[in-house]
Length: 179
Image (tube, rainbow, N blue to C red; front, side):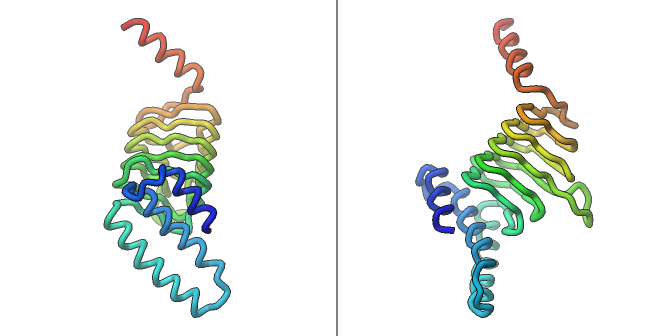
C-alpha cells in the first residue's frame, strides 16, 4: 500500500491540494484493509475507511469504491461528478476528468467496463456496460461509449463513433491547414 501511495503522490505532483490524491489515499486504504488477518483490527480499519470514504465523497464529489480495481498512476485531473462502479477494472496510467461515469448499463445487472492502460478519458464522458476500452485509446469529452473500443482509437460523440487514432489525428491536421 505504501509503495502505491508514494507512486500516487508523484502522480499528483506532490500537491496535497489536488483532491484526486485524497480519493486515492482512501481507495488504497480500503483495498489494504482486506489484507489484515486480525478480524477485530480489520473491522476497525473498515470503519475508518467508511468514514473517510464518505468524507471524501462529500469534499470531492468523487465516488471510487475500493471494490473497483484501479491500476498504478491513476490520475483524476479535475474533481467533481465522477462515479466509478465497484465492478470496473481500470488499467495503469489512466487519466480521467470531471463528470466521468464508468459503470453498469442497467440497475441490477453485472458487467462494468474494463479500461486498458494509458487511456485518456475526457470531461463528461460516460462509459457503460460490459465493454473493453483498449490500450492507448482516448474517449472524447461528453462521449457516450456503449461498445468496445479497440486499442489506439478515439471514441467521440453520442453514441460514440470509434476512429483509429492515426486517421483522427490526420483529419485534425487537415482541418488546421484549412483554417
